[in-house]
Length: 168
Image (cartoon, rainbow, N blue to C red; front, side, top):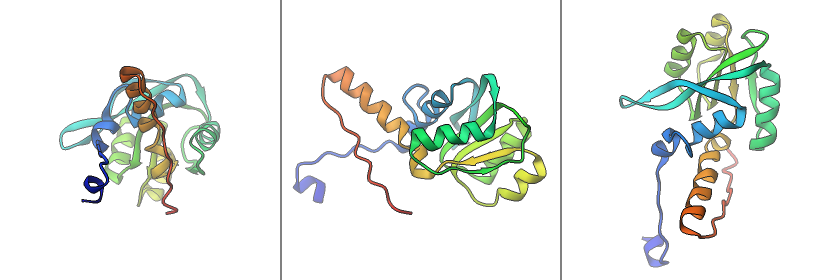
């Protein structure tokens, strides 16, 4: 009602933006890391909303964490339980689940990257896989920024990303 009274439009596309193969949050995270997509990951209602990626040159979980800290303006929490070098990553921005983590573990990836999750610590340690929690909010801004660029270019309009953190 407040939007209508103030002649403001609202468009929300949470999961479709997560899943979009070019402008989506998860595709943008993979691109940000410099990893190439090798498959899909994380099903929601029978549809994949994310990706598995592979690095051309193996890297370390610490370097990936530093890159995310800098580019997403966040503070990653890293569970460093995987191999010395990271070749593969399964990621899901926002809130990953224990089910998603276990799927990544079963697939044998080196790193599971998500915004936040619960009940993963012991599973990661026992399974020998790295985990990075890069922040729910931080991991879901990259797709919105990419979409703004697409809309701006397509329609010749100015777009602006307004980052209003929740403080949570």
